[in-house]
Length: 257
Picture 1: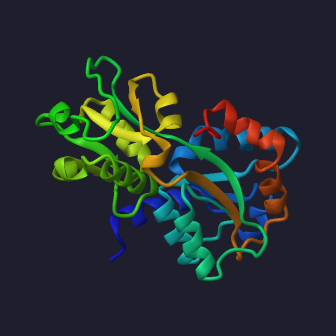
Picture 2: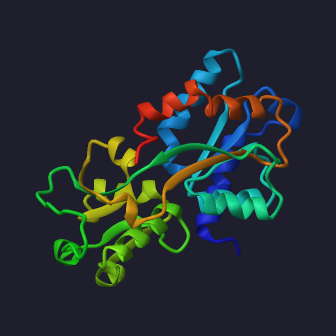
């Protein structure tokens, strides 16, 4: 049976594709599988591309892990934008990327958040009192076993010496936006997300930024999938990594560490 996270991602992909036949699909823009944290920036980029007279790209957002599995399973997609290098490496090892198209798209930072009305104050330094601040609550973060934001978070907490104190209190979400939602709703008193996720929400506030040295650099690669046949796919990829495209991501808080 297909895992629930992958099943939901496939349903989202099918909805994005719609009932179009392969011929009619060319009337739509290329299908982009993009990490959940890229939602606002990639939507802005698709809008800017469409304003230039191109068919608007079709965007499907989910955890990078789920999207990579979709591509591996033969999803009819054109581009993959991952929140880490590992899942792009995964597809590259399986020869599922078009040679010469992998490129650095942008970067991000990792932050600790609380609900906007929370009075909790913490400094994300070595052995900081995270477990005490959580109390009986849970720490919302993307699944640390597979999802990039969760893996970065676990690495940072391990480097800072507090992972073992909170590992049993983690509320593992299917992607970083689901982790954000837990904190927004007050279902979790604290969460770990990207700086851009926190920037996109008025319901949370950043109470600490993890030191860059506490985790691997948070980089977003983009590449064409080997199965892509859309006439606009390569042009849209080039637009994303152009000065104009990267400026769109900068406006949404990306490209900083």
